[in-house]
Image 1 (cartoon, rainbow, N blue to C red):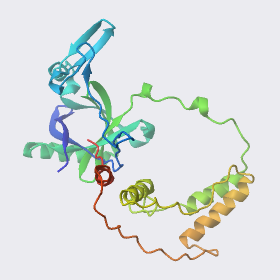
Image 2 (image 1 turned 135 degrees about the horizontal axis):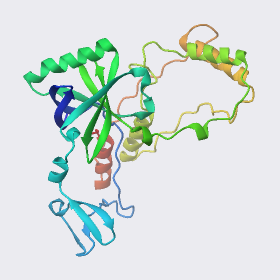
Image 3 (image 1 turned 90 degrees about the vertical axis):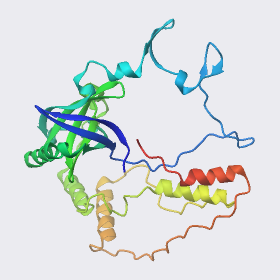
Image 4 (image 1 turned 180 degrees about the vertical axis):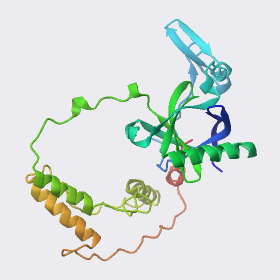
Length: 305
C-alpha cells in the first residue's frame, strides 16, 4: 500500500469528500553516502547547538523564523496545524478550466487522491465523472508543509490525481532567452515536419524501448564490478555528436532517412544482431565493510514520499 502523505478533504462547492493523499511517483535513483577516503568510515551530519556546543536530539529541535540576528520567533507544529486558513484542512476547488489553458511548466509533483471511507465513495466518483465528461481540470488551493499551494485535479484511470502547480509569479518569462529572428524556408519547415512524422510513436511513452534509465543501469554495473574487485565496464563506442550543423537541410534529410530505417519503413537499413541479455554476475563474499556497504547502496532505491 502506498504511504499516506496527507489526509483531509476535497471541498467541491458545498460537497465535502474525505480523502487520503499518496505520492504518484517513485524515485529509482541510486543514493550515495559520504565516506572518509582514508579508512572508508561513514561521514555523518550531526546537529549541534551553537551555544552549548553539544549534539542535540530531535526532541530538542523546533522551528523558528529569524527576524534578526538576535531575535528568533519559535513556531510549533501545533500552531502550523491550527493556522487560520481554510485550505489547511481541505483541498479547496476554486475553478474549472480547459486543459489547454494549463502551462505544463507550472506542473510539479503528482499525487493520488483516495476516497477515505465508504461515505466518500459516491461524491468522489461523482467528481471524477464530472471531470471526465466536461474534459476540464479543477484548479484548487491547499496548504501543505508550511505554505499555501496551487493545485490541479485531473482524472487518472479510475482515480483523481492532484498535481502541485507553481504560482504564476514563480514562472520566469522566457522572452529574454528567445533566439533572434532568423530566415526559415518553407522547404525546411516541411522537412522538419516530415522528421517529426517519421519519429512519431502512437504507443506513447509507456512500453517504448527508449523510455529506460540507462544511466542508473550503467551505474549499477560499475558499482557491482568494483564491489567484486573487477574493472568498471568500458563504454561502448558510438557516434560523436556533431559540433554544429553545417547544412541544415542535409541534416534534416539524413535524419528522416535514419528514422525510417530504424522503423523498417524503407531504405537500406542495417540489420544488427541482438546481443544476448547479460546475466547478473555472481557475488563473491565481501572482504571488507566498505565492499558490503557499497553493494547494499547499489541495490537500494530511493522512493519519493
